[in-house]
Length: 452
Image (cartoon, rainbow, N blue to C red; front, side, top):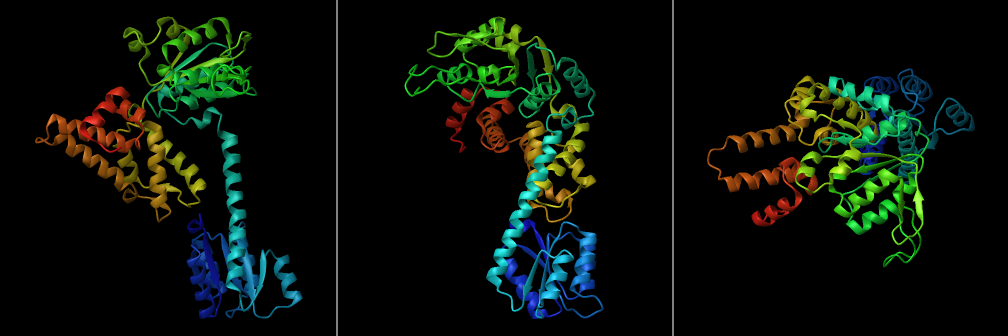
């Protein structure tokens, strides 16, 4: 994170200021210079620096102490180190009293300056992380953190408030990246169970035997490796909410076990004989069409109706494009603080580019796009140039769609390659984008010899 912190070296001696700035740059920081206090103050008005090295004695009618006081008026959080060749106890006391963080005597030991800067930046990193954490804690589980002015999303907000304190099971359906877990958390933390546990588990992440143990726990010795009794997610969520993500991928046997839990509110640990009763609210989510899965016989109809007591269907981002500017600015605010970059705005041209994208990865993709643009941004504004990677993807898609010379085999191979790049090799998400199941995707990757 060094390069994201700006440092200004203020000294009327050119050799001193340039050598110190060069040393700081070698350490990986971004360092500017100023030849006088007035020049430093002017630069502080135009740009925010995390740290200032200020010479105590400078010509031009304004000394280091006065420069420091004016900089602190402009930037109260800046760390200022006073440097002087004329060290006395009185000047040191005056400098520290007026707000200097450190007091260094010339000739400067550059190795010691490196240690000093590293220590101060370490503190600033912690302060920044704490500020971000407090912000997240203040907003994370409020409805206001789910940002949308789309009428369908506003209806979902109203529904969340109505059902938050009920015990009824909720089924959240929507494409990957639409924010299903965020909706689940909003339900939990808006209701009476807010002070109780919220426990999430992905039903697609584990093999059947491991998922059973994950959900219901196991007794010591119930299988190889079970060296001690373990509580499952249902027990850990007692009094609160269990969030079953990707419920459409749950194996057939566990569908029956889950049905029993929903009906009886009790279960047995793996290898156990004691019936365990739980008070837990179940919220399930899926990007699979469960009604179609029921028709195909891969999902139990009785379980579907047990889960689908209250249904929430989240519209994909392409159906609520009016939310793109809102979400883009929201992610910009969060990520710029997290990444330590002072970028506050997105240009109109950049927003038009974002509005023209189809967002197959939905809100998650938009967040990733904003983060990628921020990482390479060199200005205080995200411009169209910062999103050229997205424009190139759009152009590539256009060429792919309009090319009259590609065979169906070549088109399919390219579509799979684009989906894998867009999802960063996530097979489940790539399959969802392509509208095929994962086993088919694996077969086609092998068939076309596509590198993952």
